[in-house]
Length: 232
Image 1: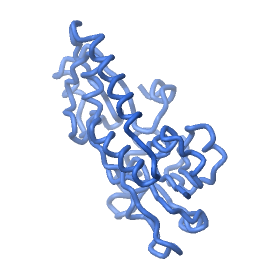
Image 2: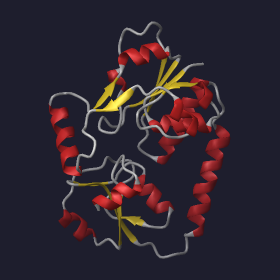
Image 3: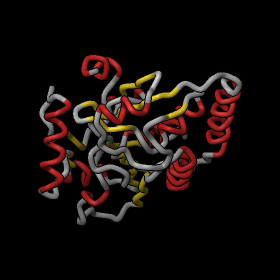
């Protein structure tokens, strides 16, 4: 089987399902599992390297106004990969290539699997869809992950729950939505800005102050901890 992944989360799912050897192309952002580092990259960002948070926001808004994406998909490289399965996402046009960017003239019609989770349960559903497409059994992984979540929640169940503000972008400010409030709850906190399953939204510093957080977590989408620390 020949698998092309257009979103790093899907690539990691394939790795967890012990099918990484079936991957034939991935995105420019992929770095795990390690063997994908040798694979062809069939996407690139159109945002200049080193752009600030505010500049990135401007590029994203301007591209959206034109009906364009900030990600480029190399259509010929995708054709050359001859995929049986394409894994993509429908959740966020800012975060990765979306499936509506796929070329219509592939030599053969691959199975296209969308990741569309907005909650932790939705992630498990996505994992099951990926597993079904690549003929693997997801249930041992789902069972293990649920057990780890339960164990974490149990360890902090009797502790005081600090008020936590999670920021998905810093200039302008966006709160973190989707599954992040669930993660905060499992870890023993109370998310004071986000709601599980809801999209992130633009906010202002007055919103953060009014929420009276005891902990503020800077977690800009797509950045590693070092870059987040510099921007924060």
